[in-house]
Length: 209
View 1 (tube, rainbow, N blue to C red):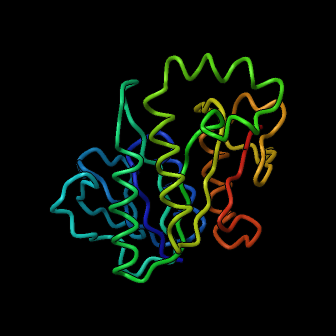
View 2 (tube, rainbow, N blue to C red):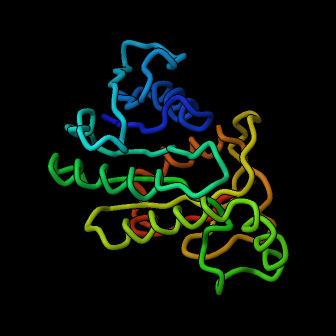
View 3 (cartoon, rainbow, N blue to C red):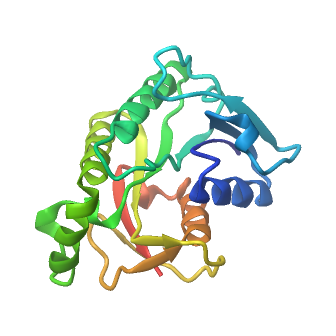
């Protein structure tokens, strides 16, 4: 497949690039700073692009079978990276006639009314520290839901730099019990596996080890 990866210089984005190349896919990485890319391969094309720049033309989206987004804010304050960045990507996808997109939010960003009992204690605490991030993640999810794309949202818990284990649990459209930790490598592998999984289309997927 031809895959476009956003946020490819971050922890999860790097794992997505490596897993995708390892699986034989052709990868286009859209990054603000090409010099920050640590991976190289004949299967990898690096394109300079800033999703929040009004001058971004959508280069790197055309011809993709799927777009995988690992964009992430680096501060705890208010942000529009997720919503504004995704709005720009959706416009570019529409222009390029690309339909499939998979993105990452977070377990606490799910609907409050659907939280499991065990999450009703820890999630409000996390919201106190990361409200700006979670609010914008929810705005991003709303944009996707209102679009006509074939989207999938992954909601992991705390991410680690642990190894690929292949031992993950998922729940489609609902919270996942005992959702505490997941390696970025396992998240990347699950996202790639979901590209052609019809059960994940226009769904939020909770995932954890």
